Length: 183
Image (tube, rainbow, N blue to C red; front, side, top):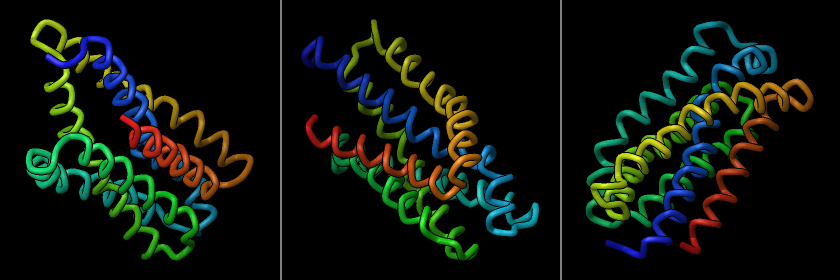
């Protein structure tokens, strides 16, 4: 088993990463009324945003798992965070709906890597006695991220618009990417 104290730092990195990425993942519902108004979208177009995100997230999970087995957890973590963050940042500057939808889908590819990489990482760092606890702590970050999305993204969107809200999440994710480079 790896260094006993360092594994808790690894867990903290997974938790914070998952929380921030979940703000982006669960943010489409809270952003919907703001995007609808700003981009002049109808209900179907709004629905396609979250559908495209989660469809590509689902489709990317298996290839991500295979890649993580081949290239390792650190590469997987950096890919998960980097792909999601970069595409959200780019997305925050796009005002054309079709292009917006494409970049939402591309960010979903990164988001879909989260469960395979975090599961393998925690499996490697935690033994049978503490693995369930570690998984539970990390999984809680998913729902906390969703709760934070409903507050943070609405707060930012009401004051500065949905593009700034998306840019903020993208920037937070990229800060986490930089932090993870050192571990």
